[in-house]
Amino acid sequence: MTDFDIRAADLRAVNSLTKYPSIPTYHALDPRDGGLRGEVVPFTGTVTLTEKVDGTNSRIILTPDGEYLIGSREELLYARGDLIGNPALGIVDALRDLAERLRAEAVPGDRITVWYLEVYGGKVTAGSKHYTAERQVGHRLFDVAELDGYADLLDLPVGRIADWRDGGGQRWLDEEALTDRAARHGLATVPRLAGVDAGELPRDLDKTYAVLTDLLPHTLVALDGPPGRAEGLVLRTADRSVIAKARFQDYERARRRRSGGR
Image 1 (cartoon, helix red, strand yellow):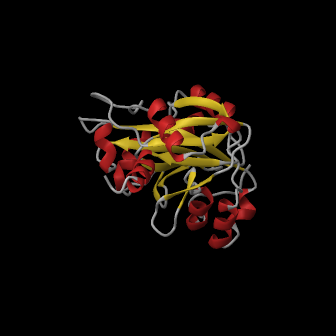
Image 2 (cartoon, rainbow, N blue to C red; image 1 turned 30 degrees about the vertical axis):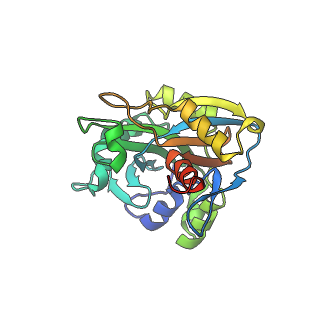
Image 3 (cartoon, helix red, strand yellow; image 1 turned 120 degrees about the vertical axis):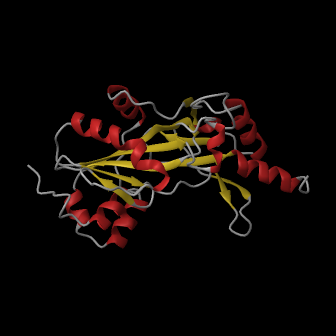
């Protein structure tokens, strides 16, 4: 049994506990001008490369009392049974049916499980045109966190919960468990492009850009019509302890600066 009650819980604390942590760029951003520097995020072991989809980071939070919440990256938008949900970016409309299904299929347990999905297409971002001409909306799973021992954490001030989260406190499904879980629930993940040894990752800006263009000449998740431009890559260790992103726009901006803006 669980003592958790979604209607009595401190939802500010739940929101902070379940936010997805910020992802650094693979090459460090220069705080002076937003350009890329030579230092890279250090990886070890096998690194999974996936497509970075240009959408909005979204959450389905399954709570121990058999309920769920739907959220954007920053805020909670809907709880099961609400008559009115926050319509921001169409996230609730895109994920409500899936949330109901995941709730029905969930294995009972005293934990909070968070499904992180990219909602894209429609009018979600300026890049939606690369995925759909008919304003279709899709979603792709990219991570799942299982949070045991949540009760003590929810008693902490929100600022301390944020410190715990940003310090790597959340427990992630590893690569194998994530893909197994997705298959079991019939969920499409962000496309897996390659698994490489960390020692083989490019460190040079131009070589990293070449990897981007070789692996992603276009998006692999178009919803209709011809596929357009991909946003970039996400790099993850198998256990999710290190994550970074590499976006086309950052490397193209760096190349323009080196060529004098041409």
